[in-house]
Length: 226
Image (cartoon, rainbow, N blue to C red; front, side, top):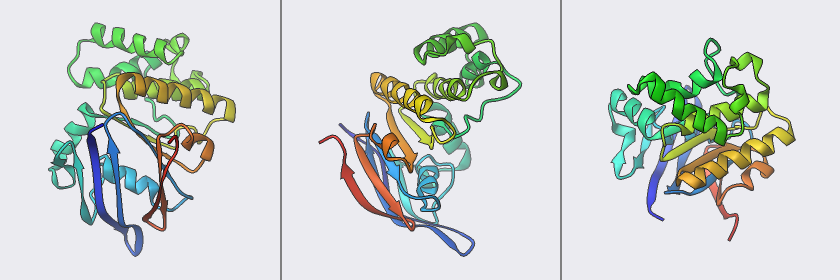
């Protein structure tokens, strides 16, 4: 596997609070990496730096040989739209749109015609076993359905990296397991790398490796399935 993402000695503070302290990690193409740690440890900040959502105060983030930590905002936004997918704890679906329209939205924003975008969206809803929610608005779908719709939306553009921040945190264990099986399964089928932030061991068990964050430092890397 080739190296896709590299974070080196990242530091990031919010006021007097140090969120990251010389944190480093790597992600290979097609690899699933779990970022573990208690609440407030800095794991979400690390994900946001890796994805180019925020800039570190110091250190570098390189994606496929490009230093995204020093890119202009517009270039980083374009990278997130074309190369990255995102799934958050509460889905963050657009309430006014149907689930089908939510999944098609990233394609529409990229200039894909409605019919083509919705055809691809239906394919992904079917792959995530949530085709029956296509015509529903997010508020009419269950929590588990909503998260699977969010995964479909993240995957519909064919991202090279999927960033998932506590994707099962708002779900019961049964729905959480289903979401994780489908998220990791579809990512592996498509060769998509996954950076998975979680504090739950049962969620991290779906990964190839674990990176542990504590007090803003990446203190331990554990091979999971070796």
